[in-house]
Image (cartoon, rainbow, N blue to C red; front, side, top):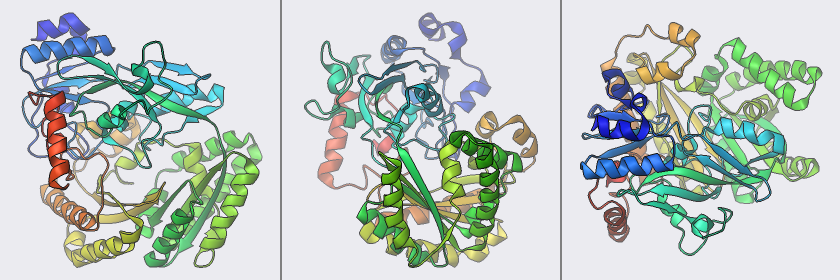
Length: 503
C-alpha cells in the first residue's frame, strides 16, 4: 500500500513513522478511544486526491480527511483503522475579482487568503474562525463556523469511489463558480459533513468590498442584563457581530504577554496609518483591560456598513440600547480583534494550562433560560472544580439571530504534541512542564457533557459536530433516516470518516 500511494504523491508524502501517525490522529481534546491511523498521505491537488481515494477503495481502506486538526470534537480523529488524508498541501488560490469570487484549495488558511485579497480591497463574505492563521478553509467548510455558511458558493468534492464532482454553477459546463443555488443546493449537502460524505478539495468563496466599520464596548454587572441587551440587538439587526466575556475570561485574556498587546496595537495603528493612533490605541488597550477585568461582564460590538457614516449611525442606535443598562468603555478590544483577527495563542491558558470549550447556538427565545441553567450547574460543582484547579470562563457571542454560548475550561495538565506544533518556540519552552492530570481531565469531560446536554434541552445546535455533539441521534426519525440514506448513497461502504456525525 505504501508503494501504491507513493507512486501517486511521492514517497516523501506518505508518512508511516509513529510520530507523524500519532500527530495526525489527534485534536485539541483527543478522545481516549481514538485509533492511531495506519498511514498519513499528503496529496497536492484534486487529481491526486481522486487517485488516492480510488486506490484506497480498491484496498477497502477507510479514509479520514484532515486540515490543521484544530478542533476538539474528535471529527478528524480515527476511531477505527484508517488512512488520514492530510490536505494542507492543497493551498493554491485563484482570485476572480471581476466575478467577486475566490477559488482556493481546501488546505489554504484563512489568513493567507485574507492577505492575498488586501491589494484588491476585497475580503471574504464568509466569517472565519479565530484560529485562521493555521486552520484551513476546507476544515471550516467541513465543521461549520459561526454565523451562516452563505459565503460558500461551490465545492469540488471527491466521492468515496474517486468520482470528482462540483456543486453550484461550478458544475455547469463553461461557467464559473459564481452562484450557489443551481437546482438543489448540493453545496449545502457537503457543508458541515465532517468529511463523512466526501473529501472537499477546492472551495469557491463569495467576495465583498472591504466595508466601513464602527466599534463599541460596554460593561455589565449582571448576566441577565447582558443577555437581554444582546437579544434586543440581534432582534433589531443592528450589529454585525457581538461577543461578551465574563470577568474571569477577560482576566485570562488580559494576561497574554505584553509583546502580543504591542503587536495588536501596532496592527490597529497600521490600519489607521498613524503613529498617533498607535499611541492612542496602546492607551486604549490599557484602559479597556482595566475596565473589563473589574466588571462582571463586558460586551464588544462591531458594525459593518457600506459607508463610514452608515456604520456610525447604526452603532449609535446600538449604543442607545446598551447605555440604558451598561457603562461604555474604550472600544480597544473589538478594534484589536479586527486588526489582528487570527491567533492560536488562546488554545492554551495564560500560563499554558490545557483549554477546551463546549458550545451551543441557542434560539433567541431560549437563550436566557439556557444560560441560567448552565451557570447553576457550574456553581453546583464549584468546590469540586476548585479542588482540581479547574477554571470555567464564559464567552457569549452572536453574528445572526441566535446566541452562541461557549463555556471554556482551563486546568493544569500536560500539553499534547499538537499543541506544541502550533505554539511559538518561546511558549513551547514556557509551557512544557505540566504533568499529566487524568483526574482533572476526566472532570472536565464530565462537566462538558453536562453543559452540552443542558444546551440541547433548550434546543441548541452545534458547529463542528464531529464525534461529540449529537446529530443523527438528536433529530426526528424522518431526518435521521434521510441522513442515513444520503450516507449510503455517497459512501455505500461507510469508509469516509466512519462514525462522524454518528453515521
